[in-house]
Length: 262
Image (cartoon, rainbow, N blue to C red; front, side, top):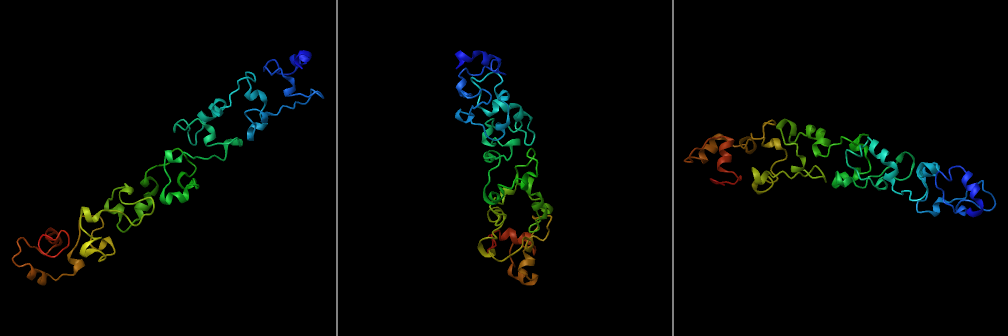
């Protein structure tokens, strides 16, 4: 075609400037030159979504040979100017199709690499598609610590009162992501056996033993067991350093068992 229609090629808009292919039949038929019949879907880059409305020159600025098919090559400025989230600050991958389709305005977007920042396990699985539950529309400053999201739960807890007692805010030390209860606080191993031995099942609230909610180092053995001082004094005659107070009880009975030292 070109050998006969070189003049039409040269005078046609953008053909020379954009280095259009000289295989005229790719775009034209022998019926008319006026309507191009070029089918982009026959190429390695079918046009979909927002790409169907762009001008050829928007992508083929330097000709039609060797035009990139990599999203980032054309949309680098979009990547760098994104603010919510900031793609550059989070060092998000430049493989745009990982999260986006060719839909206009880039929406809706997916985020299959969420586990690189915060993995959904346990109870969090149920909210993995409810982005607003954690992000509230802001994807830049969302905390990744338990306390960052659950401060209100920490402050509102009364059994025991975490805030009043100054509990650590490292929630995962006692809780799991499956549920708040049961917690895994190692009371037996670190302090006193309440989940095993004679005290297992004999209490319901932390305050049963800890009578000062602002100081969990304070505890009462006497009130819980309803000992009578006269009877207890009688049972401890001859016991060195015996005093009728909880700290003395614990000193001699660190595991709650009867008998000195145990």
